[in-house]
Image (cartoon, rainbow, N blue to C red):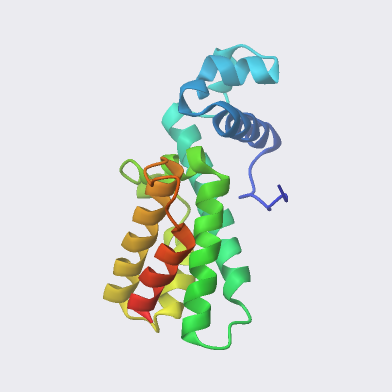
Length: 179
């Protein structure tokens, strides 16, 4: 996994976020406890509260990091697209790849209400911009495409498709509807 620059944080808070991310990615959301994070860092859980007010703030940090990474992945994927159709396909591939590569993080980002009040300003807008550009700034189409992509990756990472399903063909059919 390539390292992606994270939101700038004080060093200890970054260590805490990185340890939490490692636990989440390796073991899932049940491993994301302050006790387990403290153990991973060799400190007692109450010491974490010197750097973060609560677990909600830690989860918000992980979500902010994930939105930053996802935005960077979609920006890079669509940077040299020759047309809106090519751009849309590139953004969709990057979105899918990120969700499949980081299923627990993706669920943390998307399977509960989004705490916008805890995210950096304009981060949500930045992560939506590659898709918005791909559909030529049609907000309704962008939302519909996001709903399609989210539904597809959610079903994929939750293993809801039969093993014989051709997911690439399903993605192509869905993208064709938006082209």
